[in-house]
Image 1 (spheres, each protein chain N blue to C red):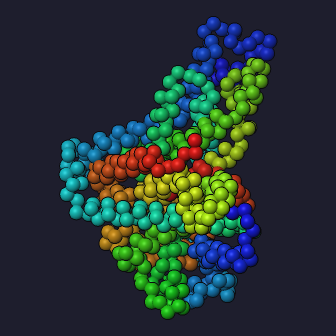
Image 2 (cartoon, each protein chain N blue to C red):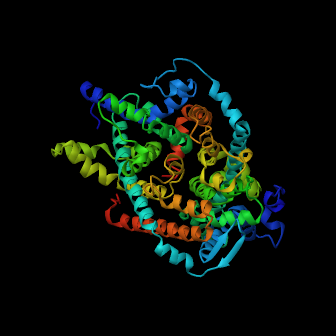
Length: 280
Length: 312
C-alpha cells in the first residue's frame, strides 16, 4: 500500500469514485435545484442539472400551505433545548461515573446502560400512555424530556464517561489541593477540557432531535405544534397527492442549513457521528 | 449544593471542617447528586416503560373509547394467530439481511478506495458522508420523486434502452428501493469506521505477504479482513439493530406497501398501536421487537469469540 499508484490506476480509481458518488450527491443537488424551478420544469426530462428559469414561487407556497415558520421555530428550539439539556445531564453523570468513587456506582452504571439496549420504538406505547396521563399529548414535552433524560442521553453519558476516564488526574489534584469541591473541579477544570467530547455529543444530539420522526407523529396532532420532518409530509395538493414543488422547497429549507454547517465542520461531524452516533 | 461547591478556606483542608462530612461521605453525596438526573430519567423513561410494556400487553386499551381492560393472554393469542405477522417478520428479515449485506460491502469498498494514495479523498469522504446529516424524511421525499414511474431513475434507464419498473408499486422492487435508499443514506458511518480500521493495519504485513507472492485479493482476504474483523462485527451489530428500527422511510416512501411487502415490524407496531388504536396489541408487538433485538445482540456478541481476530 505504500507504493505510488500508476497514473492509469489513478484514472480508474477517480472514475470509480465519481461514479459511486452520483447516488450520494445527485438527490441533494436535485432537491436544491428543483426547489427554485417552476413546477413544469421539475417534471421535465432529462432533468436539468441547473434551473433553466429561476422561480421562488414554491418557497412562498411553503409558508402559505402550513404555519411553516412556526414549525421551523419548533424544531429549532426543541433541538437546542435537547442539546443543552443532554450536555448538562450527560456530562455530570459521565463525570461521576468516571471520576468519583461512591457506593452503588457500578450497579447504577449498569442500570443506566440498559438504556442502550432498549430501542426507543419498544417503549413508545407506554410513553404515550405516560404522557397521556400527564396531559402532555400534543405538547412538546415528550420530545424534550425523553431525549434529555431517557435513552438518547445514555449514549451521551457513556461517551462523556469514556472521555473523562482518559483525562489526566494531575489537574484535578491541583484543584483539590486548592480546596475546590467536586462541583467546582467539574465546572472549572474537567468541563473546559472536555470540549471535543461535548462537541461530538452536541452534534449528534442536535441532529437526532432535528430529524426525529416517529415520536412527533405519535405525540403531536396540531399543525402549529409540528416539527419539520412531520411538516414535510403534509404538503399535499387538492387531490391528496404530494405537492412536489412545495415539498422540495420545504425539504431544502430543512436540510440545507445542516449540510452547510456539515461542510464547514466536516471533520468534527464525521468523527463525532461515526464514533458516537450509533445508528443504522 | 453549597457543600459541593465548597467555597472554603484555602487555609484548612475541607475534610477537617466537620466530623460528619468526611471525604468518603462527601464523595458519595457528590456522586449521587451528579448521576441523579440520568438515573431518574433512565428509570422513568426506559425501565418503567419496559415493565409497563409487559403490563399493557395483558390489556385491551382503546384511547378513543378510554377503556382499559384486563384480557389476560388475548393479545398473545392474537399474536400467534395474526395472519399478517409471518409476512411482517419475513419483510423485516429480508430488509435487515439485504441492508446488512449491501451496507457492509459498499462501506468496505468505499473505505478501501478512500484508503488509496490519492489526492482529494477528503472531498469524496465528505460527499459519501453527506447524506448522513440530511433529515431522513427530506432524503426519502426526494427519492420518492426519483423512484416514481415517470421519475428520474426510470428516465435514466430509458436513455440506455431499459424500460424501468414502477419501483414503489412492485413487491420486490419496493423492497429493493427502501433498502437502497437506506444504504445510501447511512453507509457513510460504516465507511468511516472501516477507514479508521484500515488505517490501523500495519503496512509491513502487506509487504511481507507480497514477498511471499500473495496477490491483491489474497492479501485482502488473509490480512485486511482478519485485521479489521472487530470493526466488521461492530458495524454489523449497529447496522442490524439499526435496520430493525427503520420507520421514517417506510412511512414516507411505501406506507408498508404494496400490500404488506415492506411492512417491517416497527411500522406494523405503529399501525396497530396508533392507526388502529390497539395499544394493547401494540405493546405485545413491542415486546416481540425487544426480544428480537436482544437475541440478535447476544448472538452477535457470542460470534465475537469465534471469529474475531485479537492481536494480543
